[in-house]
Image (cartoon, rainbow, N blue to C red; front, side, top):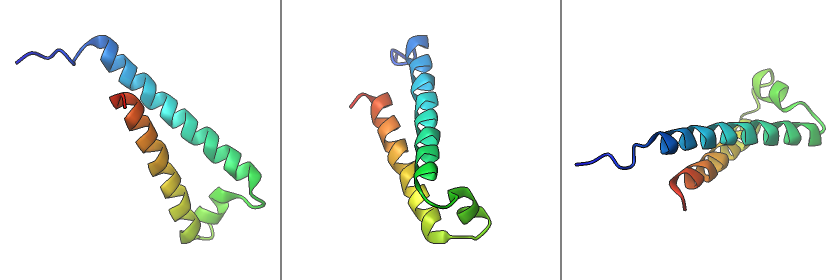
Length: 74
């Protein structure tokens, strides 16, 4: 059994895609936060807005699926 898939280039490529995915997530969160008339973070943390938290969680899952597909290659 060989570990052909365990090359440094593949490992560092996966790390790079993960970092890009996190960066894209935070940028999209900031953009959405700026476009809304209220502060998303304050709504979620201070006011315990569960519906908004679920929307942000769905956004997290969407970005995660995109990053996973990019890392996997299809």
